[in-house]
Amino acid sequence: MRCIIVWLSLLFATPVIAESSEEKTFVSVKVAKANIRKGPGRMYPILVELHANGYPLQVTDTHENWLKVRDYEGMEGWILKTLTSKVRTLIALEDNVPARTMPNTTSPKRFLINKKVVVGYLKTSHIDKDPWIEIRVKGEKVWSKAHYFWGL
Image (cartoon, rainbow, N blue to C red; front, side, top):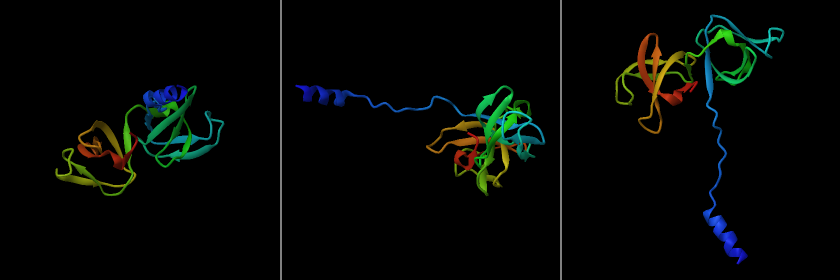
């Protein structure tokens, strides 16, 4: 009898998979020069000086008016919140990323995007298993495959 109960409980058991319900939060640098520091305060040493208005960063923690951030290469540090914006930007992970007029591989290429170029994020389209993103590059709206970019 005990074997049957165990077997039935295994038969009808629903596997539980732990998933994080937290969405990734991204910001972009809104100034021409921003310091990334070792800790949340001006007394901490500067790890790197960013010279890239619009540079995307993932927020991993907060402390008062400081954000702990990570960039696409995995560099982590703290930035003053007032130096960031909620304007969504992405960074190209490869050279020669095709920028197309429509979200499909048969539409004409407008131009190619080089590695480390920062683009404005507009929207995502889930047309197939590899999503397309509409982005703004040098004032022009184009489409590209999402996997070519970091910041989503």
